[in-house]
Length: 154
Image (cartoon, rainbow, N blue to C red):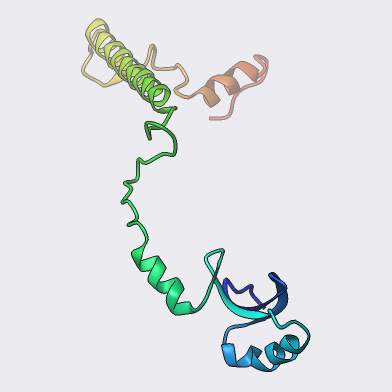
């Protein structure tokens, strides 16, 4: 059974007992029996960590309480309500952006340099150093591991 956070309880000698119920009528027979031995016994409503005379009093007090402040998603506990890591995160974002920009420029400078320095024959072979050079790393590795005395299948 899940714990209850608002219930009626019996106090005997100023201390709470283990008797609890959601409805006051459920506790009345037990309350009458306890009052025979403890005339100072009383029944109180427990809600929000406090004892109240009735649920109405608890609701009334909650309604009169201070209004809750609205917090946006950037709210943080503490004095100035800011994320202490924000300046480090911003610096990392700037570094990452600069690195991406540099890699992009380096890549496109190399591609442009290759296109301008390579002689064009018009047959599309300017992308490779020679027509017989392997195109992929896998093909280069295979070409390097084949024994020269054996013929390669084609």
